[in-house]
Each structure stands twice: as structure tokens, then as C-alpha cells.
Amino acid sequence: MKDKLKKVDIKGLIDLLKKSIPLYKLMKKKITSNIRLELVGTFTICIFISILFFFVSIGFIGIFQIHPYMNYSDGINNMQWKTESLVSKLSKQEYSIQDKENIKKIIDDYAENHVKILITDLDGKVNYKTKNGDEIQVDLYNVIKNVNENRYEDSKTWRGREPIQEQVFIYPINFKDQRSYLILKGIPDGEIKYFYDDIDVIVPVMIVISVMLLLYLVFILTKRKVQYIQEISEGLIEISKGNLDFRIVKKGEDELGLLAQNINHMSESLEKKIEEERRAEATKNELITNVSHDLRTPLTSIIGYLGLIKEKRYKDEQDLEEYTRIAFHKSEKLKILIDDLFEYTKVANKGIELNKIYVNLNEFLDQLIEEFVPIFEENNLELEKEIVEEKLNILIDPDKTVRVFENLLMNAVKYSFKPGKIKISIYKDDYHGVVCIENKGKTIPKDEISYLFERFYKGDKSRTSEDEGTGLGLAIAKSIVEIQGGNIWATCEEENIRFFVSFKC
Image 1 (cartoon, one colour):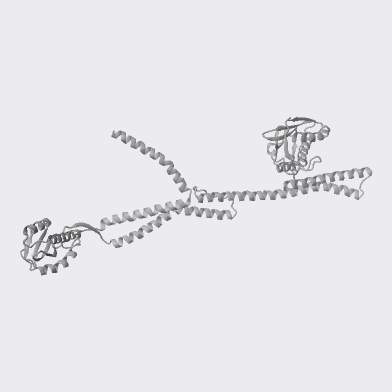
Image 2 (cartoon, rainbow, N blue to C red; image 1 turned 60 degrees about the vertical axis):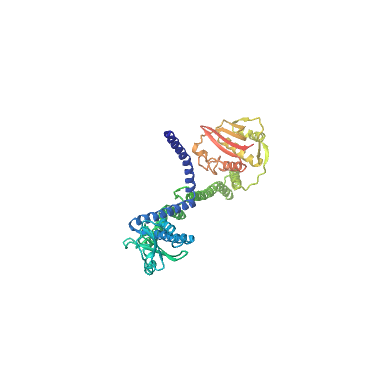
């Protein structure tokens, strides 16, 4: 039976521990995630240790400072109580002094081995006494004189002092026929008690030491937090100097850890913002350089040929007509470049107004494709269409979106192998209408695909070819698509180049 009870107790204890562990972990997590609770817990532990130290120290020191002594206070009080009780009992009964039997019986009941009781007349003659009493005559004067002189002085005799003297209590008592005195004599019972030597000095000293211990413990237990605050402060100073790569180590899940994490996030954000500003500045400089180059090239040709015409440095009318034609052609290219720059600046800065309406994507592209048929035929390109039958209605600005597909189609015409084929597909993909324009051309390296939509990007990096465009067409197309909530991207698999445009249906 006992073995069963032990098994039950052990099992119950294990279950209790299992249940308490998650609670302990939860409490620990809450405390360590709140610096206020951490500080309260730290101060509580420090105060508890200091108080425990105080009482343990007092007890330990007391072992060497304790002194025993015999205390007779309770014994004297007991003797006094007996005397008063006996006087009261004899007075109430109103006995005669001659009533020997009753009086003798009463005093014998109150008598003890170390206490004797006497009843005397006013002259000190002993009328009654207990068995251990041998007095016949008592000097009442000396008894009364010495009673109060010795009693309380001896009641607190210390160790090393002389033993306590015999204590005497004397009270008047009235019988029916005589006035008398009741005298109780004896050595009171003593009780061993202990006295702490110099306790008035030890206690204040230990209080001071306990307070110092409290302050020391608080200093030690909060040292890590203070050092961590200093680390955060030094980290902020380092970041303020411009070292945005500096990171503060996150320690713990409390407010200080969260502060360090937020400072790191702030540093990362500042670093990204500064990097973006640098890129923007570099892009602006690049834009100015590219625009200057692309404007200067046709402008130089125009000025050169017009100079020849102005100075009449031509042989005949045929040369004059050729110089005029070239200058006019270069002027047209210059106008296209300026128009593209103006258009790109507007769409890139979201400075254009959109007039969105719902458009049937199938019909919209089919109509545009028909306009490009002569261009395809002129460039010896075959057209293949693959259009879904389901009507795909999209919310766009038709005038702006036409520019997108014109740029993509002209791009396909310009960079296709000739003779060749251009395939245009329209389909629905996850609530989006998608247009794919595919052609075969020179393979575009994978690392260059992401740069196709950058302004002034050209595959061969040349700006001198007569057939090349401004390098802004795809950048303009990307901006127009994205400000309308669409997506545009490109892929290249060997010689198959595909451009995709997607709008939500």
C-alpha cells in the first residue's frame, strides 16, 4: 500500500513539474521582454538577499555574543500572587484568630518546599507557620525595612553576580478578633535567559552593511544592462559619424533589444536612402551626358551640312539637294529624340494625365496589328496571331497604351532576323490579360535582360548607327504600363526574344 502511495506521489509530482515548466517559461519570457519587470525583479531579489544576510549575520554573531543569566522575575511575581491570594482568601472567610484548624489548612495548601508562610500578631509573635517554618518571634521592623531594598535588585541577577537573596512579602490581614501580618518567605524560582552583549552596537552596524550589500548587488545585477545602454549610445555616436554599416548587437527581447533593432533598421534605411540618392545623382549625370551626346550627334551633322550650303561649297544642284536632304533627315531624328525625352520625362515623373476607359484588349491589339501589316511586309516579316476568343476587358488609357505596343512592335521589326516571323499572342492568365510579342533575333545575354528597359540602353552600346533609335522607347513603354498598374518584362531563350505586357482584367 505504501509503495502504491509513493508511486502515486512521484507521478503526481512529475505531472506538476511538467505543468509548471511551461508556466515558468511563459513568466520568464514576459519578465525578460519587459525591462520594467526585470528591474523590479532585480530589486526584489537584492532586497531579499540583504534582509536574509542581516538576520543570518545577527544570528551568527549572536552565537559568540550571547550570555546566559538567571531571571527571577516570574518567580517573584508568582510569590507575590500567592501572598495576595492567601490574604484575600483569609480576609473573605472572616476567620477568628483562634480558628486554628481552618487557618492551618489554608496556609498548608499554599505552602511549598522552598516557601514558608507565617502569621504573626502586631508584636511579631508567630501564631501560625508552615511545617518548614521554625520562627517563634519575628522582628517586624527589620522585615518591613529590608523587603523593598532587596527584592527587585536581585530579581534580575546577571551571570557572575551573587545568587538572589531570600525574598519576603508582608501584608496586613484582619481576623474577627485580631489584626495580624501574613509573611511569605522563600527563594523564587529562576529561569535561564540569554543576553546579547553589545547588541545596541551590532544591529546598526549590520544594518549599514546590509544596505551596502543591497547597493552592491544592485550595481552588479544591473551592470550588464548599463553596459548595454552604453553600447547602444556608442553605436549611435558611430552611426552619427557616417558609419552606416555599423550594427548594434541585439541582446534580449526587452525594450533595449527592440531599441537596438530599430536603430539598425534606421541605419539600413538611411544607408539605402543615401545609396538611392547617389544612384539618382549618378543617373542624372548619366542622363545629361547621354542626352548631350545624342543631341550633339545629329545637331553637328545639321550644322555641318547647313554650313556647306551657306558657304555654297557644293558642286551642283544635286549636291545641294543631297545636303538639304541629309540636314532635314537629321532634324527629324533630333525632333524624335526631343519628343521621346519630353515623353519620358513626363511619364517617369508621373506628370501625365490618364483618361482610363474599359477597352477590349483583343480588338484593341487586332486593330493596331492591322496598321503594322505593311511595315511587316516591307521588312519581309511574316505575322502570326494567336488571340484568345474570350473578350479581355482592361481599364487603360488607349492613347498612352498605343505608344507601348507601337514601341514593342517597332522594336521587334528592327531587331528581327529578316526574312523572319513575328508572333503576337493574347491570352488570359490568373485574372490578367497578357500580350506576348515574339521574334527571332540576336541572342540577348541573360545579364542584360534586366537592362532592356533602362533609358538609353542599347545592346551594342553604340550610338553612331543610323538605324538605332533613341534608347528611350522601352523605358517609356515600361513607365506607361506601370503607372496604369500593369507589368512589362522580357525573356530570351536562345534566339527567341519575347516581350510581355500584362493588365488586370
